[in-house]
Image 1: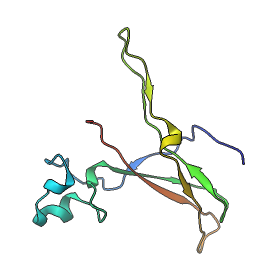
Image 2: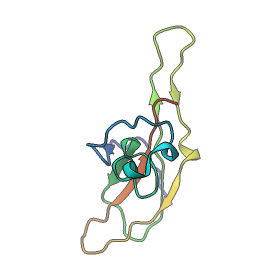
Image 3: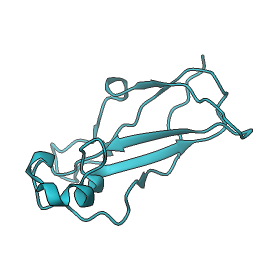
Image 4: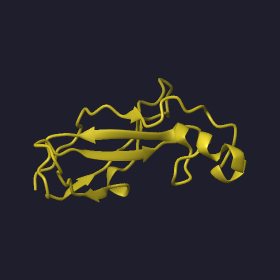
Length: 114
């Protein structure tokens, strides 16, 4: 199976209008505010991102991974950092329904303060 690295696919916020939560963890959100701040899975909406990969073969298994990259600082000792793509790889199989162009939607959760 051929590997393709560095696909330039836009990663978009799943909930673009979601506000930055004033809470440190989802468990701190008051019950009357859960629909406002949390997804159905109990994660903060603000940190949820998604991407769509097109032109996939229906029924074929794909390993998909999203990594984060930081260029580092222009200060000696601050090297670029990248998360390991193999640590968060998920197996996915697009199942076309009514279209000729199966796509695969992937959700990611990203916290930049940790």
